[in-house]
Image (cartoon, rainbow, N blue to C red; front, top):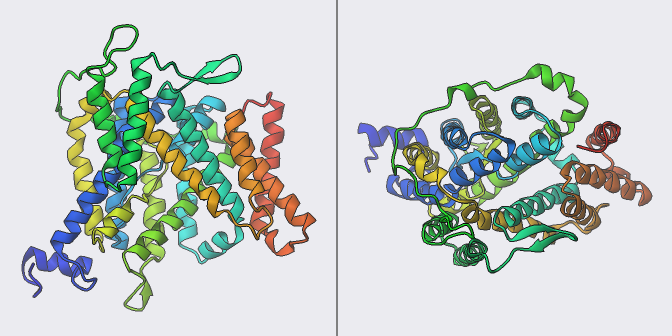
Length: 454
């Protein structure tokens, strides 16, 4: 690579600080390829989840790819960090299953909620309140949110893969006489093995393997589990009708019900992004450059702006991906990682006929493992704060037993507050906590007023 400033590589080196950060152009490209392989499954899984909200799966493939491209480019160009962005695997489920299916809110209103949450994220990023928000939010509640959503995601995977079927007692395990169920079980074991072996593209490889196997496995009706696509490659067609899919009137009309979820989109993205970006920059050995912290205002603005752009494009909250860690482990140190990821997402858009052919039994194992991975945070619950392990346990229990994430979040916040008051831990009762308590009490009153159908 040229280091004297001459030619294209010299300009790239200066702009991205490749040499200054102890990396090389080839190492950055390899790190980008590794990161893409680890997170490419989102092109298949996110559309499948958003389809639960009645959105067209092909449209969601295009919006997912476009949002991933724009988000990764924003982080690369604004913050010069080796962090890729895509629609988050927590917010997409809340968008589809909670907001649209359970609460009965139309998708345009849900997109408006994501848009406003993203604007709030950007506004906060431009102030000095970021650290105060992080310090003022109960750790056990944050753990509970993460674990409850993990249980939610794993539940969806169990149902969509046929591993859990409704019965008189609630749910029962699917019939092992059904070849599709056996295929889902095999996919779960395969994905688990690949994850244990730390194969960077393990999730994607398991989806491909189950999809291919599904061409030769037939369901009880005699049809193959995987319907073969009419073409392997086709020029992508962006769904322009998904641009600016907002309904501000509907947002104002349902303000009392949608405000708590809008706060979740904002807070969930904020805390997930903060944790992910801190983990990746730490793994990459990046802390201070030119006397300024590498993880500064630009990184947060890029993440928040990505959610705003994602909602404009027609998808759920876009955020930094923890899979970027594998790129950092591969030597990625600069925004060239995100540039590479964005380019690969864009190139993948021609594969949309194949992506639409992926069956639910192929994505189900990934959902289950992602959910279980989020549940693993339970072991890191703070024992010395007011909520301890009780708050996250209650949130997971309510979510699993009722499928109602918003009620679990409300009860978790209120339990934490009660325990803090009883324990006279006044320093843990912050203004942010009291504000959220008020919002969620108001939400519970409104939800019960419409028959508890939140």
